[in-house]
Length: 232
Image (cartoon, rainbow, N blue to C red; front, side, top):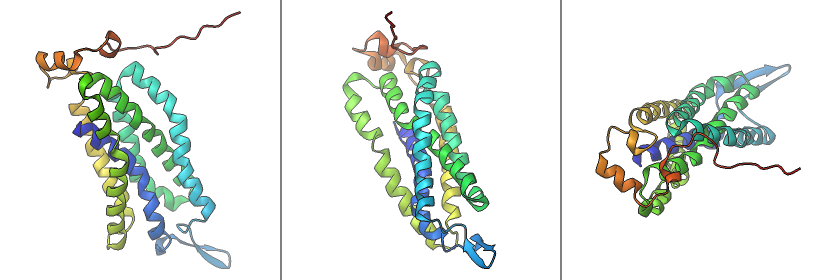
């Protein structure tokens, strides 16, 4: 539960960083560019540009939800979440550089953050069904879904401190990216798609997790669990 929670929090935190760094970026002298007879700061985004950067995450999440859910059904959560965690960390790492190139490259990084974020809630369902005893569903769901407020609190606090320090707003992206890479590796090393595949569980624990579950909840499915019937 701890590993899953920290991975979900990392992915969510990576796209929240910008919500606070907007304040610091507009005063960064490295963003000054000559535009004819005037000088502008490319990090001082207009309201429409800020909205686009925020909505890019929503677009990525919307477009990524179905394919990521489908991949989890076909391949399991282990590799899919690992890939999404890497995408999120790489996007965070490259965000300062892409932002310096202009709005469109930065929008692409934000779009990737949205695709990665689409894995968060799908992962909660996959983990709870496969790993949690029926009697503990409510506890695990309440803890895992708390990643949203926790990531917001932690990221805003850290980013606010870093922005005011000599490290600057870029350091927040780099630190979050480093944490994301660490959690991706930890996830891959420790997480398995079911207790029967894990080297950390014994037979007694497997029986406890599977107790009172249907075969649908226990067995690993490779096909989408619904059918479409067309009547002539």
